Length: 296
Ligand SMILES: Nc1nc2c(ncn2[C@@H]2O[C@H](COP(=O)(O)OP(=O)(O)OP(=O)(O)O)[C@@H](O)[C@H]2O)c(=O)[nH]1
Ligand SMILES: [Mg+2]
Picture 1 (tube, rainbow, N blue to C red):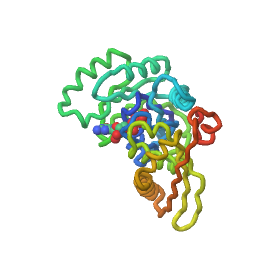
Picture 2: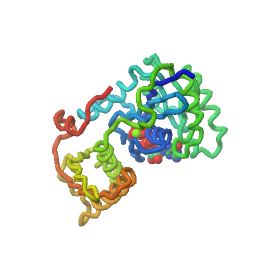
Picture 3: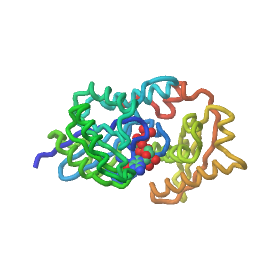
């Protein structure tokens, strides 16, 4: 049996479920998720290897037009550049159909030469499954998709069908990664993301976008001691992040510690410090030190 291996980029507007799908396929958390749009800020890979076929799934930030602060431009470019030189593209929408933001992604996908599969996500929310038929038909008329797969990234329903459709398009060639590897990010990165995930999950609508997380020290004792800074843009945001009598930051810290302990499989002491760093999202040096650069 010939060995096959390829890069498979998942694109879609923010919040459709791209990261949830990658985690489901890999079987472990490699990318953070939340109900807020623009949770993913980096290019993250999740590797699925089975029966001499390696599919390197690439999670991307939700595709949107590059506007505003330097951070937004870096994020938008990261999503755009993840479509270059890939073997397969998975375009994700939801059962709710084609909105303007989905059509924006479709236009970007049309310029790419790789074959495209359409994934229609969140079908667990749809009671009458026959309502998918008109959407499938409409989608088939919009572009020549290699396959159209309705699925639920959350429950895992039909994700096997997506894998089958992708596998058919993966070219022959040596594997890019060892068979047991599931991602290419280091522990420090994952720890900062697990803290950021709780910031996104536990705070209201605006604060998460002004926040970034940097893990500064990891001290290998028992329990493992981790110190991280949460950067915010304004003093008022610091107050909100801390909450009344420090309740909010305590909640973020406890949840983040639990998820880090699950991830590492060992006990952790997590020290979170909130720091006001005005204009970090528009300062290239700050962005570099936080690991935000366009990675192809
Ligand atoms: N009901 C349901 N919810 C889902 C499904 N997939 C994802 N979600 C939810 O949709 C929200 C967004 O999921 P993410 O995986 O973070 O979405 P994303 O496309 O990666 O979003 P960005 O990184 O912001 O672009 C989360 O609250 C998920 O739990 C699904 O199949 N069914
Ligand atoms: Mg995401």
